Length: 113
Length: 110
Image (tube, rainbow over all chains, first blue to last red):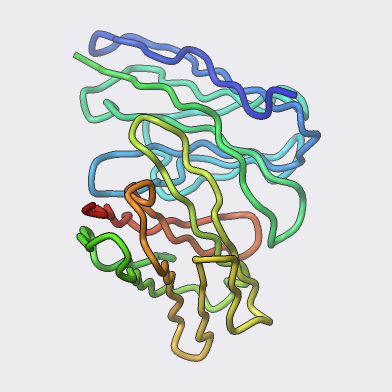
């Protein structure tokens, strides 16, 4: 039982390049999330998917797109990377309902130069 | 939009002392308040949570209190130990969105 798995763990991009961060969970959770973590700013929600087939914007969606491929997988795409997107990205999942714990992946450290 | 304010941003205590971290939330619809601990280079992990129908919850050396009227909730760690040193995040959740505070870096000096 791996929980939430993210790939890759590290990535360096040049400005303007595109890439997709992958996330998969094996806990049969309905809801999945993408956060970015910057020093002194905590975890900010980029996009979330309450259930398979739905996605919604979070606090900081600009410059990102997401795809809920199936119940297990939720990917985050940067179409044209910018230095401001240098951050640590965390994927998380939780069961349905308003008061359940979120489980996090191990994070992806992305640097845009 | 919804936000969560967390104070202090840094907290240094002596081993054995207590540590208190306070948060304020803005979304009246929030009904779930988790606290996460994040060690350096690792993922956030849940340490305790409280739901809106409960005012206080305790788990060994950790306790959380909630005042829904004032939209305040707090984390209390008693008898702190060096391994408690980490970044702690409060969060509030209404519906499917969990909004996090900016974090508190706790240092426990031996």
